[in-house]
Image 1 (cartoon, rainbow, N blue to C red):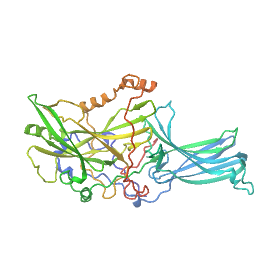
Image 2 (cartoon, one colour; image 1 turned 45 degrees about the horizontal axis):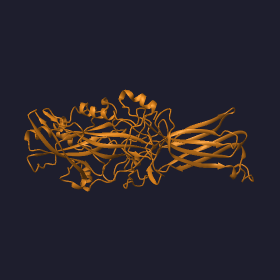
Image 3 (cartoon, rainbow, N blue to C red; image 1 turned 30 degrees about the vertical axis):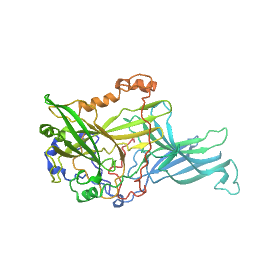
Image 4 (tube, rainbow, N blue to C red; image 1 turned 45 degrees about the vertical axis):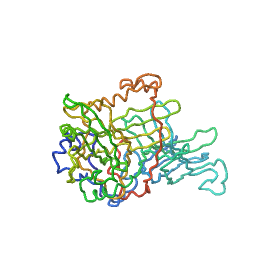
Length: 496
């Protein structure tokens, strides 16, 4: 039996090759050829496997009287069933009634919830009800008793079901994508999906219920990159920068001032570019480029070193409610690696240097999503240059660009990475910046610090944040079209 080959894990430093510094990349030009992780065979190359079944039951004095079964994707399902966007929730409900029991209906309830605190009520964003059988249909094993409000059933009954899980829902006139399931113990929230079997008994009697938690895997697809970038990926050629592929990049310009060797003040202009469209696949990378310009040749040599450019990917999860608002601390979740360009062209001016780079995206990143009361957002942030002898006048971030993290590759040639997987290195400037974001004034006038986390959760202080805005993804194709564009990693750890 052919098994899916999993790419290396990037969760622990010991799991894969490490890069001591960004400068090490420039010293080894041979690794700048397209770096390809171990491939995951396409689904068509694998032997079809039966869906994995998960079962829950309802017991009474005589034993199990009802069995609820949900089938999950055979490749992904481990501790719980996994349902991929575009597929149905498939399973069955069985009753084994040894005596006559009055039943009004048998139905399946599907819920999607966000859980913020253990002691707080969850916020429900998805509700769906599917009736498998009602008393109006009569006893399936007897004729002539339809039209009643309650029917007494006895014996064995079996109802298979297959219900679509809608990829979107509407609220307050807006359309939202269902978010990817989140059950990470380190996360400050949970995105929980539940399927529940309900046996409705009627008035004055308690209904019988049993439920199964399942993971929903969103499959939103990136828009296609530029024609030149697709050709680059196809030919496994070096990445072309904004000067050679203007349509393939989105750029911002800024400047930074500082003192050089404590002797004189300099100004450095730069243009930072990200590959467009600004949506990227987790488990892959974010291509980026930097053009540095200054009339001081000493500063140019110093700040154009790959290790001097400090660029991070950050993640923020935000909650918005009426009258009270709260934001989780913004955290860095990836660092860019840079190297000199290798396309063989020279700079137009002696006072300008160019660098190419990429940010490796962990396969475990939570995909971007927006709900009426909650969202997870990502942004690429450019910090001041860091080099021996250079001191910026201000340590605040220079540029920030919102990006979207999705789960499926763009159509066309598979994206390539150009450096081995790397890990965030300790950086005091970056650490202090994100620590300062955790000390924001709350609605009660207190300060929320790391030591106040428990207090903040207890008295439920809410930090004022920006409002949410839903931006539809025009590039989403048929969710069922996953033959050639499944993510590198579509897997969940046990206990997910």
